[in-house]
Structure formats: C-alpha cells, structure tokens
Amino acid sequence: TEVLDMYVFKTLSEVRDLTESWMREYNDERPHDSLNDLTPWEYLARHENRKNSNLECH
Image (cartoon, rainbow, N blue to C red; front, side):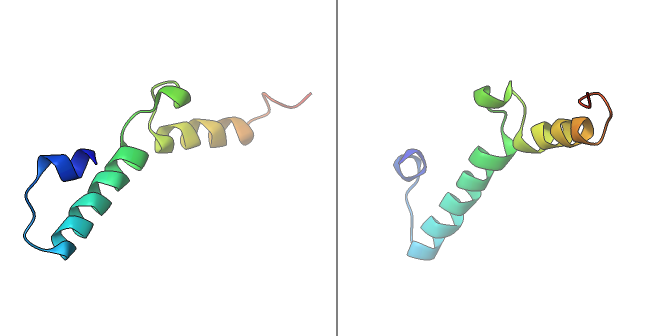
C-alpha cells in the first residue's frame, strides 16, 4: 500500500518491479528493531561469528 499510494503506474509490470524492489529493500536492507537495529545480513554475520567461536561452549 505504501508503494502504491506514492506512484502513478503505466503498466502492471512496472508495479510488480517497483513493489518487488521496495519489498527487498524493506525486508533485507534496512535495520530492524527486532534485530537490535541491525540489517538481517549484519545480524546473521554476528550470529554466525558467535556460532563459530568457543564463547558459547560450556
């Protein structure tokens, strides 16, 4: 809805391309509150670093 309210489109494929791009940025590239203001890739990198270290072994 946010994307559709901001633009005037000429074709359905233009709508699909723009909304797909917006969803990718919204979900994958922006920081998320639930991930302590990290992007999903930053969060994954930190999680993988911890997983591969000995810090969590007891």
